[in-house]
Image (tube, rainbow, N blue to C red; front, side, top):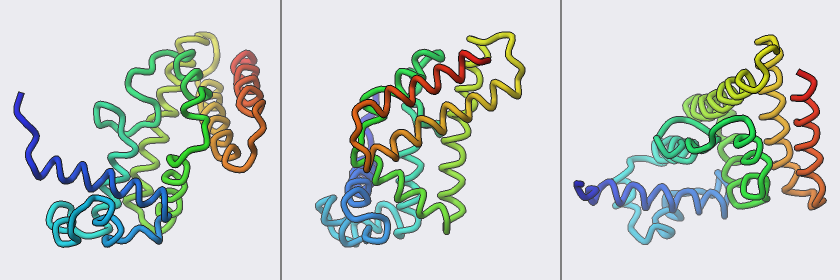
Length: 189
């Protein structure tokens, strides 16, 4: 197998530094200077490998919202089936309040004024909703398509709402209640 090029390694290093910088300083505080410091290189090198800040933020959003195969997603590619998706979305890793929440919120903020970032987020969330709808169709054969699609939206909304509420509500029963609500929704199909 060929060794990754230095340029590819540097781009990955810069994208990781960008994610750390967004997590620590928010989107407005994510400057090329701070990214360069976090990456351990000069601003000139950062620009050489990734271009301007807008291009870097777009590439970073694409990397952040990609599964292991590079496709836009929130669910990892390895997640299979409805139970696996629910276990992931309401599991401790996804539901935990973490620096990733700050990154997600920063990209949401940026998507309001940057159509290209909005497209990245829309693709990731849409593909996840579509996967959920397919898993629900497998598990609930008799449910009408519109009901399965609505349930998929409900599952995704409940999971994301649970994560964001977790940033300020440390109630340990919150995730279990959100999962119970989703289970009740799916049982009604």
